[in-house]
Length: 113
Length: 116
Image (cartoon, rainbow over all chains, first blue to last red; front, top):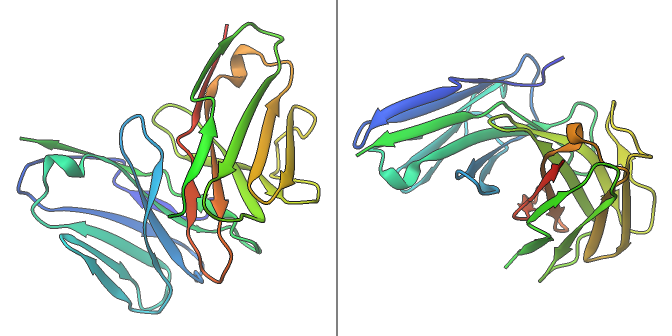
């Protein structure tokens, strides 16, 4: 079955508004990674969360890992047009070693100027 | 650092042709590389894990005789789509894993394959 559910699938915001994407799993995760893919480009690693309740910030981006390690979120404050792209969460495939990942379906962010 | 080069970036060819895609880690050694497939506006789907010096591990539903993987060195993995057909048209992306615990995957630029 699906390893992780990511919502929403699409988000359209005006520049300056905030944006959040969520990933939820039915099982406890050892870690979760977040990637950004610009239109026509390849995924670029943003961050990895490992600890329960972890919160990490990268400028306007805030990443959270739930206390139960079953959900995670990425929040962008005051979006800019450069934030446009699809944001994916990725989790280790069940029973997996060696870095095999399952990617969520992604949230496609559009920012209007 | 951690640059992955993928070549070619775009391929258009006739049905029945075999196409080889290369994935190179330029500034680090990658004992493990991954091959993904991505359809338009969809997520990345892991096809196989490429291990240096050993056979690739394929995900369920991926035909190993259709998608041949060779990982001959610590910096190069190749994916050959054999006897490609229009349904094989897709965006193929490789990634490389650097050594060490909890390291991220570094992705190549991808190869857009169109089979006529």
